[in-house]
Image 1 (cartoon, rainbow, N blue to C red):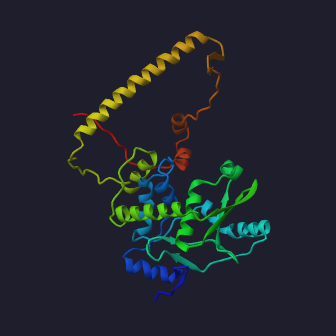
Image 2 (image 1 turned 120 degrees about the vertical axis):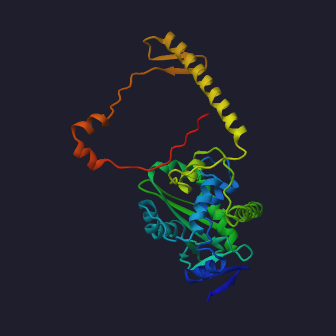
Image 3 (image 1 turned 135 degrees about the vertical axis):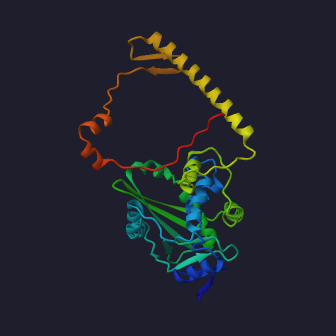
Length: 323
């Protein structure tokens, strides 16, 4: 039986047994909206995440296969969560505690929050993050990666807490923490967009419309990764778009040719000079030494060794040809 209790008008579900009960009653294995979902829903201009990619993420969460994938970054982030929380307490003098509950929005049960820590004596929570040195710039000068910001506001929306701290250990570089406070309009917008996405796409089992992004390509490849050999179908309503695509390719080819012509004019004037200037433009035509591994020769000379290291990657090649 599901064990729930109310906090600030929000329902709190005991984890993990109650979550399984709730999921089973909903006909899904998991009803969790990942943090990356919120970034794309509220800020679609961010080119790194799109609704198409998110549909794949949500599909994984609502599929009949519940075994999650893990990698070293996820493992380290999980293992270092306690260390980040300790650093936060050390830096602020505040006390935090674990929460043994999975929080579920009372009105919209698909909105769930698995929080890292709650701040003792304060209506606030704490999100613990780790980052590598290459991502240090994303945390400088008060900056927080956008999807983490939205994740924290999602937690506020679900739990009703009025503030959320985010603390990050940038491995070998720095420790930072920031406080985000309740924003009525942002949280209203967040709830509305999550609701619309859930009802319009996840519950309906409908993929968002393609948007031309690389992440959309990756999501489609992930969804439909293996073709049924020899299968064929007749497409409907795409003849005009395919014709338009053909025209676009022709324009791209002409523009690339014009680009090359201009660059050739520049090179003709530069001759052996390495650097040049033209008004606001600075041009370099430098010597570059590149070492390339001769795979073909290595395969011929050392076939056994080559086979020991060769790895086959399967994918689908997409081609369009006019009849």
